[in-house]
Every structure is written in C-alpha cells, then in structure tokens.
Image (cartoon, rainbow, N blue to C red):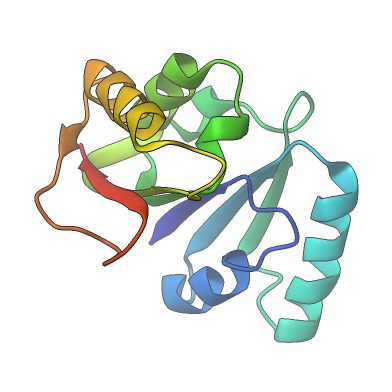
Length: 147
C-alpha cells in the first residue's frame, strides 16, 4: 500500500501508517519543515520502519507529479487550514490518488469553523473527489473523500 501523510511533522501518524503499509509499502511524508523530517527519520529508524518512510520536503524533494496515480490512502489531518492554496492541494492530492483511493480529511475545532470546513469540502469536490457518507470520526470536523 502507498500512503501519503501530508503535513506529517515528526510522524505521529506516519510511523503507525508505515507498520500498516507493510513490507513493500511506502509512506510518503510531506512537510514544509526540514527539522521535522529529520526527526521523523530518526524516529522511523528507532521504530524499524525507515525503509517504508519516504520524507519529502516541500520546495525541494516533494513533487506531486512524481506520485501521480500511486497513492492508495492520504491523511490530511489538521493541515489543510495551514495551506495557502487549498484548491491546488486538493487537485494535487486527487492526481496522486489511485482510482478507488481514500482520503481522511480532518481539521481541528477552534482553528477551523464548520463553515470553513465545508468550503474545503467543496474545493475537494471541485477537484474531483466524492464525499463519502461514512464518517471517519464521531466528533469534530472530518470526512472521507473518495476518488
């Protein structure tokens, strides 16, 4: 399985995702801060999943075109509100996803209003995603997006 953890930071979710991706799987960990990716690499070594973790630095080693039609699952957890061009983010993620792929999109209460979350959902749909009826989290602002 190929996974994209966009806005991975130190890999709170990346390491468990790497264990789930299994041997031969990849977790592409994208972040804007090189220090966070350096910490992620050390944590991945310690956890025994360094071969699965693929750190990608925005502006340097991250290029969405290199992952076109390769991603099975994407995690967008508490990150979309930080991205200046949300429409472009959803477009890029859509292009990276395989047909049948799933995105777990969640935003934190307090930082993002329900209205802002709905605007992001509309941008995702405009990029080509379908909104799943399945709710990933019982509370909070979250959705599954399908390609």
